[in-house]
Image: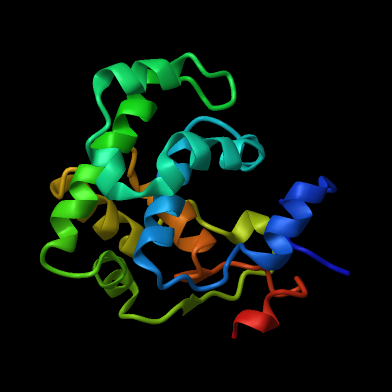
Length: 185
């Protein structure tokens, strides 16, 4: 079975690619979770985050933004001592900051609607032949990054936003030779 070149042979990556990556997500809180984890990945490999994803879920109350927005500095400092996650102070405190921003957006519209408008509510289908053809950002990820930063989010640069958009199916970047490519068209 042919897959995208980036997948490799790790069973965690294989499962993620085959069942999650590129599948459209329309649930606001699940989108929030994906955005947080993509931000946590900054400067690291995605598999590092995948292997720690359940630990993040546990420590951050299953990414419940209402609970996360009220986490104290003391709680975040305790989390920073836990080797089960990436112990980067800016990223850990950024989770709380992003929860506050999420709640603010949610006062006026569902977070899913806010995000999906950057692709006019439907996945962008690309037709890349190989991994080297796939960009690391585009106009939509730049616009999303600017809007998220303006709303108070952190760790949402244009490259992070592009990776997020790929992961949650806003952009189909499975290469044309990948068995998942046709599943998303």
